[in-house]
Length: 59
Image 1 (cartoon, rainbow, N blue to C red):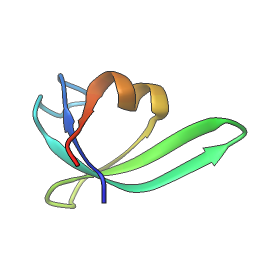
Image 2 (image 1 turned 120 degrees about the vertical axis):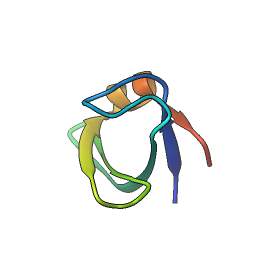
Image 3 (image 1 turned 135 degrees about the vertical axis):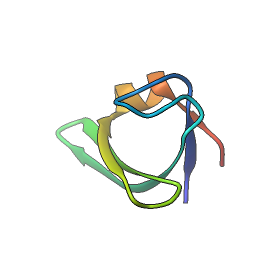
Image 4 (image 1 turned 45 degrees about the vertical axis):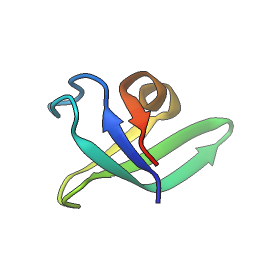
């Protein structure tokens, strides 16, 4: 499972918050990712652009 960490504040989450990628989908060239916080309580859906701009891959 891929792990990401926030580079800066994003959608109400603080810098350094860790997320797991739960699902990846692609529809007509547009990729979307479903991320869950490390405690698996909160979920966000983001585009590939948002992922590359705001997150750092940990593993």
